[in-house]
Image (cartoon, rainbow, N blue to C red; front, top):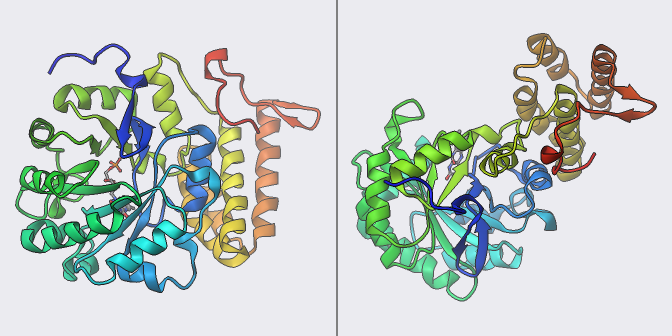
Length: 355
Ligand SMILES: Cc1cc2nc3c(=O)[nH]c(=O)nc-3n(C[C@H](O)[C@H](O)[C@H](O)COP(=O)(O)O)c2cc1C
């Protein structure tokens, strides 16, 4: 595979009627909810974002409404479904479109036991007749409504991603994302770059790589080994909503850094957005899932995590953050009047959201 063509990283990819940057946010169940997506958007104004996965039946019966609720700034936003049978698909797609989502994605990657047991997620990759039925129905339901995309694995147990990708393309998928590990392989085994290269050679829709892309260097090496069109950033976004921006800056030859003080500022902002989205009780609980990721690596993280996770009300959490800022500001002597001043990045880095 030759080196990267001139201007490659700045070029956009086309998915249906949408033109989006090559880097996008992967769907992470329990992580990439609306609050995290809103924060990602503050750094990356037009990257494609994905919802968490919901079974088509759950979309129809959704009671809390959390997974279908989002803010305008989250566009372009793709809703991810799982499905094992044709039933529910029409109604689910109609509801997703009514809610204003821009695209649909079918999950063929989830290895969770409950999902696989029902024959959806990664299990559908091992049942090709059923897969063809589901994608035919989804393509019909989305035709003229929104682009239809799919996220696959190397295979359920057998590595059949090349065959599955060809079936998906033949059935009208307009983008395919691939996490090149089988379901039992989890996250520790090696990524199958050769398999992705084969998919790229045998299909012509945009192909997105998902797996361990946490830096521009990784993305570049992945491109050189596979020739993919784009990259999903997954776990690297957890506690790090600026990750895609950081990678895009590196692709443009610039460096983006963020101080501890500003990291904590964004953690608190995450809390505020959570409270707005979920209400006080659930918002605080959901925030506690995200919090440890923000303070990873901060000096005294273990003690900080223990103290913060004990807190029972949003007010206590907000007060605790104020205390943390004061301690840090004193330590860093970064306070000017009432204004927080972060360590000044070089001019080339100063493009992210203002405080
Ligand atoms: C906590 C967690 C939840 C995930 N949830 C989903 C999901 O709902 N849908 C999906 O297609 N993939 C899901 N994935 C897989 C990721 O999208 C991604 O393919 C995988 O984590 C590899 O990319 P990464 O190394 O950049 O994280 C999940 C992964 C994790 C760690």
